[in-house]
Length: 158
Image (cartoon, rainbow, N blue to C red; front, side, top):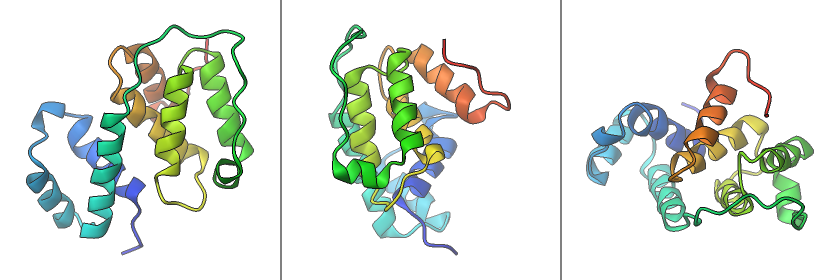
């Protein structure tokens, strides 16, 4: 089996537990047992649970989109791990109101917490989806991101 990552565990949780039936999520022991049965290491499972805990603790308050606000400058570590396509995608999401500035920062925080040397656009899209899934009032943005990930022909941003 290939070396799994935090993102692999998170995607498995999201696809098998959270997304299809959020009410089916049981206690952590049951989830951990299911993940071990699926072949994930206890270390990566623990890191994934820590990642989710951080996400739950950092829910930004709902805010109105800021037009013409400050420009986000990426720090060196973000530039090293997120290529220009990823950074451009984040800017596009914010410009079109899919993410607000606080949500963008949460996405960046969670992407950097993945403990991966490089984060590609597909990985970033999953992080955005998980962050939006965890945000009350973000249903329209979540639906758009779902179409980007699951749809055969992604919709343009309006």
